[in-house]
Image 1: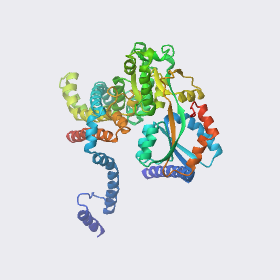
Image 2: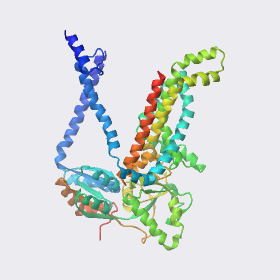
Image 3: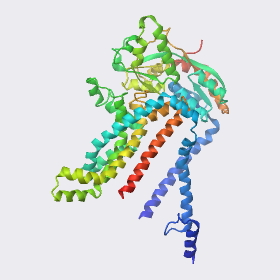
Length: 268
Length: 280
């Protein structure tokens, strides 16, 4: 009785292992033609689309992505993560990695700006940036060592210097911050869930959400206070030869058009 | 002949390890396999202990993550464990003593938080107690918000850690205490008296070890907390969240904080072990 059950279990286990081994095998065969991309979380939407278009032109090249905050990915790469390409939202991180002989060379890929995104319920209450400092407004930012968090704090510093906002604006605004999220996508999630009233994200993420059919309410940030951020594409030492193909494709007309349609700016 | 050989081998080679009735070949095989898994289980802990340096310690002592993290972790986990004991003890008693329709289902539900991923718990908590949640939206009408506050941290901890206490307490009430309680009652003691003077003292080791295990789990709670309570230094950043934040700022600080949590967990589990001895 028991031995029968055990043998059935054993057979099931063997089948599971065999099936998963086949799966693993299939992917490891393509290992020679694959590019592992560590990308800033704010590039998720456009890179998912890029993967589709790219694999139509180059079906033999496999793209694998790891999305997280740039500062998180930097730590992972410092700890020896095996990747081919690093798409970062801050130049400093790429330079640090180059100093440590992890990044071979890098180039500027695209630019981005900041915007304040609001939850559905706060649309009426928050009419301008000034209202963000009102009482009982819940704000979320990305943590200050994430690029978008650093840029958001820089933006708040600039707002403080501006005429209509007044002396205690920054203090009141900072008091409204309830969480520092690990990356920009988590900020967006907290707003979409309605848990927080407003958050600072990239304009591209607003465009990406719109492409996905989500019309999010937003507040424009005054031009003088806004911060332009740049994305950098860094090929890592020991990257697979296909990495250059993907990188070239990203800078091709197709790639540029795609980035533009997702709300990223081209340098100019 | 062969048995004599095996017995001698057993006695000569592995005097302490030898298991009665088990042939020496299997003893050796089992020992080697066990050694492998023990090494595997110990390696991360050894890694944590050995990679700590004085520089890391200085950095950690200067880091705000350590001070506010320790204070907040102790504060929230002590409140959580008190809530768990107050609310969980009656349930454990009910589950141990009565049998009713749907009890099996209830037991599965109570145990569920032990196995579901904390991220699932995090989303569940948001959808129940968040500002748009089932109960949260109703609370929000009265101006009460739970998410992003220390209350959310406690909610997450209670949700994840409560089953560990309830399970152990249930065992305690099930054990010998049942007959002793009946005996006390038959001798004329009121129910409350027999419960507080007989049942509770008998179940004490179970209650205590359940409390400590549950406390250790509450101290270590990460996933549900970061999703439901967010991450804010000094307000919702408990030690596990502080490790996560420090990881991308200063690895040394993260290592020190990790060692701190490790030692706390070790102490708690060692106490549980000693209580288990007392129980026998």
